[in-house]
Length: 318
Ligand code: C5P
View 1 (cartoon, protein in one colour):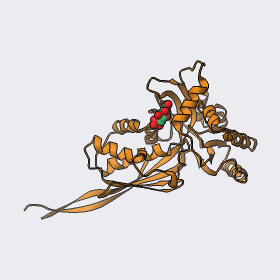
View 2: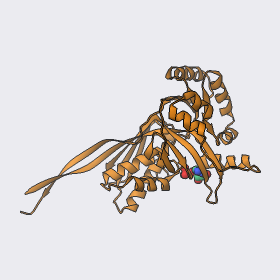
View 3: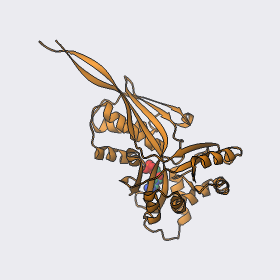
View 4: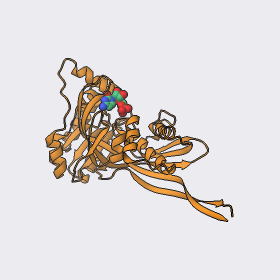
C-alpha cells in the first residue's frame, strides 16, 4: 500500500525596504550600542528571497547592486539560515536566492530585510512553525533592524532598535531616494556621531509627539516638518558631498530631505509621485548622486509569496 504526503521544497518571501522617519540616538551604552527612539516606515521597494531544499548550502544574489553583495557567511541572510538551523537542530542545507530591489548598503535595511525574509522562509521550508515572538528573538540576534522587517508598515523601535511596537499610520507618502555607489559603514557613522557630540549632554531618546501625530493623521506636511535623523550630521561629516545634494533637492521642491538611517542614501519627501518624478529628472541631469529610486509608503510587511510542494509517495506495510 502507498500513502502520500506533501513536502515543501521552495518558499518565496517578499520584504520591503524602510526609511526612518525619525531617528533619535541616545548616549553610547556600555555594550557599544546606542538606545534609539525611531519611527520605521516601510516603502514599496521589495526584495524577494527564495529558499529551496538543496544538497549543498548556497547563496546567490541578483538585481539592483547585486555585484557588491557578498555571497558568503558575511551575508546576513546566510547567517539567518545558519542561526535557525543550529538553534533547532535542522540540517540547514538549502539554496537561498535573493533578488534585490532595495538599495544595497544605503541605510534602507536591505540586508536586514533579506535576513528577516530568510528566517520566515526557512521556518516554513523546515516546518518549524516558530511563533512570532521566537522569530523576533532570532531576528534581534542578527541585527538591530531585523525585527522591524518582520513587522513592516510603520512602527516605533526602541532599545537598540529591536523592540518594535506598530503605530497607527494613515496616508501614502512619496519619496525620491538618491543613492551613491560609495557606502558608509554603520559603526563608523555611530562612532562619528559620538565624536561630534563629545562634551555635550546627550538626552535619552524619545519619539516626538509631532511626528507620531502627523503619521496618525496622514499629514505629509506635518511629517515633513517633524522628520529628523540624529545620525545625519555624522553621515554629512563623513560624506560632505551629500549636503549639496540635499540643498539642491530642497530648492527644487522637495518638502524635506534627510539622510536615511546611517546613510548615505538621501530621502526626499515629496508632495506627490509626479513631483518625485520631476525631481528625479532634474537631479539625474547632474552628478550629485549616482542613482535614483522612486518609492511610496506601504502598509505591507514581510509576505509569504509562494510555496512549492512536492508529493512524496511512501510504501506502507500492509
Ligand atoms: O545591530 P547592527 O548589526 O545593525 O549594528 C551595526 C553597528 O551599528 C553596531 O555594531 C554599532 O556600532 C552600531 N549601532 C549602534 N546602536 C544601535 C544600532 C547599531 O551603535 N542602536
